[in-house]
Image (cartoon, rainbow, N blue to C red; front, side, top):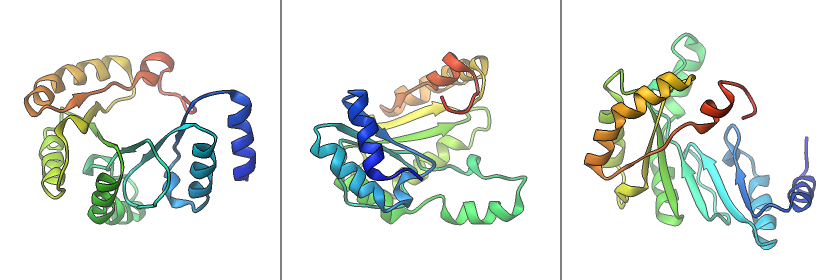
Length: 180
């Protein structure tokens, strides 16, 4: 296990300004508060990528919240299916994050299935104060052809709602590989 001090030292030696704390789910771990606090004290810009199921009070310049849609449920793993469905959305935590931080809500969408936009609108209706331009849709997919096709399908719904569209650039650049 790497300590907070070791992580801070690695960031210092890299001479980067913007640090993204991501995971899995970085908000699960108590040391994220110390890590974000120390990095912010050193003058770094901090983005935290989270599913939005856990609220923590910590320094953060951008809370990048990616609530999990029903399309993320592992349907072939019954043990995890129920557990995932019960834990994938926490509206109290989502609302606190939106109220407290500069945020974006990023949803991974498969426009081929048709239900994702309806589900997103349902989630947004349960939250107050969501700024439409802070809502980003990212096409689901693991290859460039599917991503580009699905992105084109999302252009009209995104523009209609004043949302934003973003790509999975790492797939375009490196393919569906771990660590990118």
